[in-house]
View 1 (cartoon, one colour):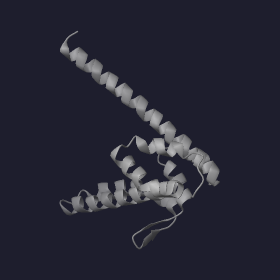
View 2 (cartoon, rainbow, N blue to C red):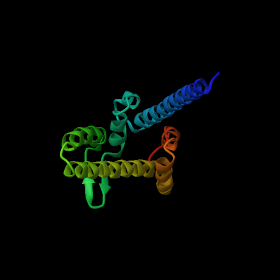
View 3 (tube, helix red, strand yellow):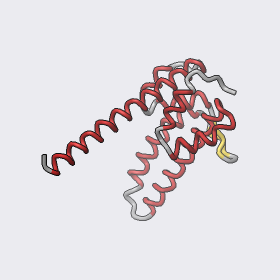
View 4 (tube, helix red, strand yellow):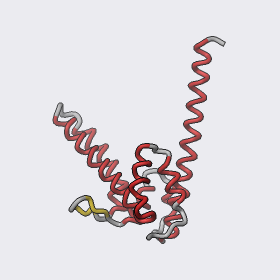
Length: 158
């Protein structure tokens, strides 16, 4: 085997391994959210198995969140639609030089704040004071989020 063949073989192995890990983490998230949706009687528990619609379950459980003095109601609609709206608005506004990039940056930062706030409130609902640690670990080590959600599948709110 020459060097290129070894490099391609290693790349293929890493790709397949990454795909398998991604599928396992997706299944853990889906099963965890499905269990929580059943426990919380949110209805449409099967939404837990559809990638963007999974956020509907989280929003349905949380109902609303507060970020500073601002309250975000109807979270079951805001969480799944916000990334879609941000992508559409960002691609349209991104055409404008400089200002478009700045607006896209602001939209992305707002989306990050919304996501982290939702994650924190979600963990706090079930684990109280451990929510800060769980949120930080979910951000720094993204594979931990699905594991945490799976472990919450039978949890009751505090």
